[in-house]
Length: 344
Image (cartoon, rainbow, N blue to C red):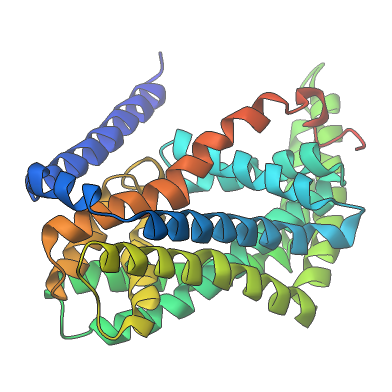
């Protein structure tokens, strides 16, 4: 086992340990008997409303993938939904949110049948627009809590929000200018070609990559310069990341006899509080995200027992349950279709 492999395993173990420690800390902040009493007092109407909002949010999330993939073929909504669930599954399985994004082009290609270059553009545009919208909305939430949170917590949330804006802008700009990689790839291919026996085949594969960068750039620009894509994606994103989680949390707070003022700003604060999922601290942000969101809302006056329960339910319904659901469609992925040099 190489040193790099050992370090990778050690980092992974540490990330899982941090996640478990964060969840353990959350449990020490609540009275279990009181939490059980709160759950027992939830009425059927609230439970049904929470489930309905959760389904609507999931459908809106599927729509964001449908919007960016349908310009490249007869993509069905169901195929976009499967791609989203699989990407969610990978995001939670591995200790980095980027893992699912790296796998996304292959997943999209397998689920929709569109070409690899187009699938790469679809994944990149989805990531870029998602991050830009998330960062901008989270900034509004940060503005509301500014001066009301401890400075350390405010700095953490603010840094995560800024990273979203920066990451989104970088992905979109890089995606529209992939040609700058061509010269580097061509130069590297020339060096590799000198390697005896295998050099020629490897160089040929590298030359093929430049074809995909050109095609992906064209597809990327096609999506990012279309106002309809931004508008339609924004509608889906708003439903999936702002309205559904915000309504779910409000319904649960009201069901537990608590609340948040002003209620209209709760979804924006929630987006900001969840922004730490971008930081590669734990797999899928598990533990750290819940702990940070709890700290934010406790600082804003929400009772600890109530908000811990609400956040855990919200994350379970909005993130972890869909990720588990993604396991099933992932079993149906045609592995033979994942090679980028094969036509869809």
